[in-house]
Image (cartoon, rainbow, N blue to C red; front, side, top):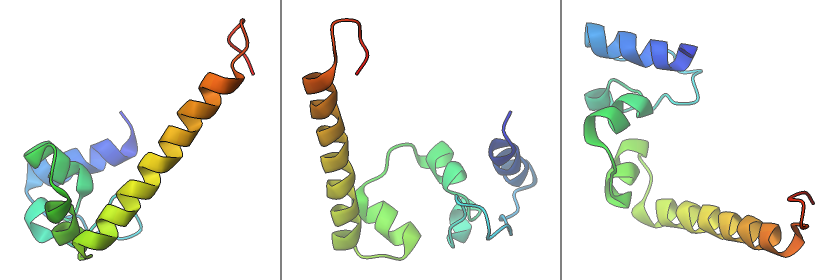
Length: 90
């Protein structure tokens, strides 16, 4: 198991918020023990409003980030469709 999951599991087991602010999954949201993995485990899929609340950002900014990510994924998929050779390699 990776260290990040171990850390999240330890936080859940002890019911104590994570103090490792250097972790890329850390967030300042005590209800979810300051861990985005714990938030996902507890709540599953969340609305953009819920994500914005946890990250202390506006809904609009979260929507912009989502739109940019989806656009990048769509471009990569289109590129893959256009440039894949018969043998499956570029």
